[in-house]
Amino acid sequence: MQQFLQQTINGLSIGGVYALIALGYTMVYGIIKLINFAHGEIFMFGAYVGMIAVMNFNIPIYLAFVIAMAVTALFGVIIERVAYKPLRKSSRTAALITAIGVSFLIQNGVLMVMGANIYAFPQVIPNRFFTVFGLRLNMLQLVIFATSIALMIILQFIVSKTKLGRAMRSVAVDKDAAALMGVNVDNVITITFAIGSALAAAAGIMVGLYYIKVFPFMGFTPGLKAFVAAVFGGIGIIPGAMIGGFAIGLIETYVAGYGSTLYKDAVVFIILILILLVKPSGLLGKNVKEKV
Image (tube, rainbow, N blue to C red; front, side, top):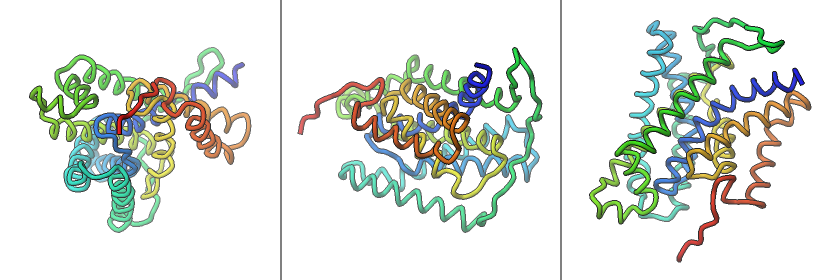
């Protein structure tokens, strides 16, 4: 039981990171029905910005979080305006192919600028351990979990209780009707990309701190796993992305802890196949008939 609880703590830490990335996927899909496969690279970009802020400018980690989230939000807005906005009235296939192209563009752009080296993220959070009821808790794990939960609560508050959140929900239901009611659809979509990108940047910094490394291809696998988390919970549904993120983090950790680390990635993608076969709409999603 003690080992099970220890693995649960480890899984919740990494699950919070997956949940933050999955929120970006699910928000964008909920608004414009686009699966933004470049989101993993935005996550990677945010990790680099945070690392540079701490390593080159000696900025405290909490300010590095804010700066990385702001810079990455702006980066996400630029991507949306340049790559996705011109394709809004195109087919979903065209937008999906563009997202894959943007992913490779960002990946190789960072590779050209920063090189293929693996950078060590500065250990600015003390690597202290606490023992509670026989369980070993790492200070870094606690910070990651608490930060993830705080950002999710802030996002849920924005979506549920603010005027911007009402506009986002109305655009998600019907863009044309929202425009007729005076909602600036373009601005809502842009803000959605900015928020999703900022959350991805926070996740990128936390992964950099946790694994002590940053490199140009670090966003690929976590991005895919976060997509699985979004589908698991019900893509387009914010609480679903949170549940899916923690679920994938726990499942991955249990597989690695009780089986082998060689199988943890395979199990995640097997889960995706099973979800698509059994309940394509996800855990919290509902099957909706679409008129054609």
